[in-house]
Image (cartoon, rainbow, N blue to C red; front, side):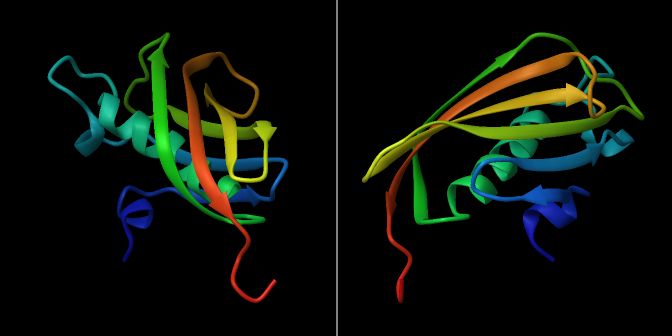
Length: 122
């Protein structure tokens, strides 16, 4: 079992222009305040970032940033929606909004940049 599966993530859509990953906040994902742990939210955003950035290239992260806007609670379904901001020859930057539900309020905003190259054999 990989890390994303261990945390209960499900990839809803995976492509180079849009990727969506879902996670339901469970008891083991809570922090000392009874809200979703920041690491759980980061992991969800990072998974969407990894999937989208590797959809059309071989990519590895070089920088990430996450801003938290709202708390997520036990039972909340979080959906990370990743889209490209800029794709260059060797670097690409992606925006990932972590939302409460498919169309709900933004809980966190993740920006990440990858170093990229063509996939072997292409």
